[in-house]
Image (cartoon, rainbow, N blue to C red; front, side):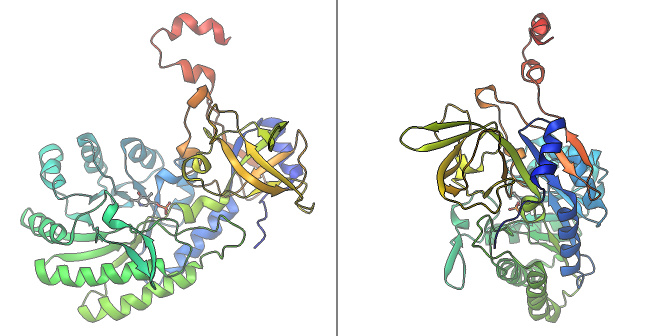
Length: 423
Ligand SMILES: *Cc1c(COP(=O)(O)O)cnc(C)c1O
């Protein structure tokens, strides 16, 4: 499918006139349509809740949009808990799915009344020692080990992942928790990332539903929810078929009726913690071509770099690029599109077929709405770009200003002496 930017060149230039490139732009319309589609896909399950994975796009203005759909927040650090808090989420609207957790984060989750999703059996004592008695409802994260396959193709390798408890441990954890006063239980697993297939959630659900039936028998635990976590992917490449959330919801429902209903578990709630699927396609990094370089290859230098969007450098991830205003021009040039870091992996695209790029052209880097801005870093002293929200009425709202050199220097003790440098 041809990838179409959610703004025109004219609109992008208008925005760039006020907020110089590079900047992140999010599309409220796309976010809302997806939230609504997710809600409808699981409306057969009365207790369904999506807990948006805050780490994907940690911005209160984004988090608040999801409040309109009854969603919650999935957090895994103190900052993320506070982001949920300032965005108005409380109690069971907060899921805390962390690992290698600092004590203060359990304490803060308890203070907010969030649901703790324990990653490891050794954390039970650690929690009690630091945060006090367990709450009424608790969740545990499962890791089945081995590889996770769907129709003979290996999706991922849980046996190699640091997360979750073994089958024996999760049963043991439920028994311990029950003996220490926990009344209601949840089960969580995240077994494959960025799955571009409608079969991932239904397959994962079937495994967790079977586990729930077994754990109920073995431990007598009152299981109230199954958390399918994240992992529903998006088509980064134009030749990929997007997931159909309606079909995914129906697939989970089928397994639910097959496995849980006959076991007397028909009241179990389905939870999700999607990040990428909710926001990936509805955010773009917009950057301007500032240099061209002709050596052994053709390079286009842009004003964004891997410090703004790390995925290509870190995972060699593909991000589609549209040269705004040249959507219909032939893609008859081959470029590496690069940033300014002194790191040769600072390339948004390698050997990419694109229309001829001239200095000053605006590039729309697609699918940067999740795990984009949030993975930003400050290598080479490069600064975080601003984040902007394109509202449904066409207005643009600054939802996070860009980092300044003052921000960068502020953590040095002697900052006050140097202040003059920044006037
Ligand atoms: C990262 C993460 C998510 C979100 O994953 P996506 O691939 O963005 O959907 C959800 N839950 C947990 C525990 C995570 O670590």
